[in-house]
Image (cartoon, rainbow, N blue to C red):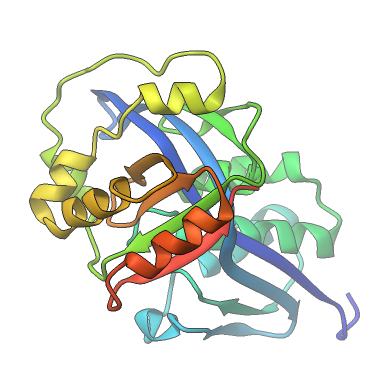
Length: 273
């Protein structure tokens, strides 16, 4: 490819509007049902001819010293499958790490999409690679509102709520996904329902919220503050935490709520895509 060609891809934050944990599986994973949605806010991946990974952006320091991560693994597995490379990759990191909004998974998915554009590989051919990188990577590769089943990798696109105002709030604590799942009490509280997305989400839940709150009680503080704001339609923790979110009926209500959050928390006013 020409040395001047750069493929840039957004790595949008992932939200779990609902996340139902149904069972532990013999392979060590959990059987899930989840409503994936994505927002405008996220990281950015840029790929060009060259070599090495460079991390920039406000959360670059959180990844300092990492010799191997999901971005480099995505590039390596793409090369194994389709050839090409080496590539110079820039990860512009705007999302907090270990925060339940799929930052690493979104970065890996964006890397695959960027490499696919440069090498002429279609999106469908990238899903088998995405599946090997993590349970959320296929959803982030799709990048659309979807119902996820299995480990979350079995996807069915559904009508979303594009343009809905959203506020993301992370209290600055990293929560271990493995530890949250380990503390899940093992009770199947039933499937996700059917119908319009917002109604289904409101009737749903996040089964990982209780163990996340036990590990990081500040998650409960964030959720309580979000739920108390005017114009809130839904307030919930995303993934295994600690990022929480709220859907608002208007941009004005969202922006007013943003001003009510603690100044030391990470806050992003955004919209669903």
